[in-house]
Amino acid sequence: MAVDLTSRAVDARELMDDPHADQDMLERTYERFSLVNAVVSRWRSVYRRDIRPRAQQAPLRVLDVGAGGGDVSRAIAAWASKDALPITVTALDADPRAIQWARGRGSAVEYRCAYTGELADADERFDVVISNHLLHHLSGDELAGVLRDCARLVGDGGIVIHRDIERSRFAYRAFAAATWPFAATLLADSFIRVDGLTSIRRAYTADELASTAPSGWRVRRAFPARVELRWEASRAGS
Image (cartoon, rainbow, N blue to C red):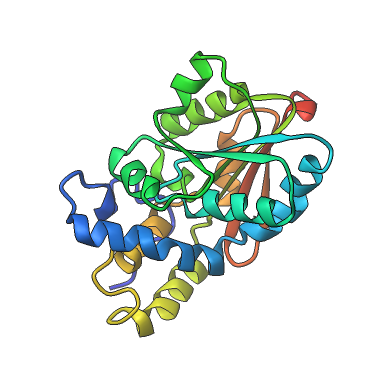
């Protein structure tokens, strides 16, 4: 049966979001996120383009929102350490299961279980706020709230970068084809394949984000089937 990708499947739910999800499968999913993100998310290019140049000018505080198992946070911390740059990374997630698992992975990352609104209300500030595969989890109202929070969390000259998959037939077919050979091996007993296909069905298109995001936010497309939503404090309202 053909999959309808003409609009967001807002009622579809990822299995790993179930509070009663199998703990072993959940942990295997966290463990394999680093492999998937290394292939599709391209955070190394974001680090080189947006994070490293800023850190060469002044120490940076980076906040990773909806960090899940924290693999992107740990990768950024490792790249910064290799480059001998003064970057501190905080991984934020509202799911205590994710934070508990991530804390067991060690590294120089700070892990916090909280919502963006809690940090914004406490007047915390960061130089760079990022998220990976967070936006498709959010309803329209939730998206608006997270964007408001993130804009409050960055100081003068700060930047917010949300990156996610873009819903399209190409994205759905490509992910299905690329993960099929590993379904019974590398991805076995995890939620990666099933939830990945669900996340594409729930994902926003670039046009949907552009029409939904407040003034000052900018949308970019990237390969493969990626979408990036950006806000720079110096450009807000421009």
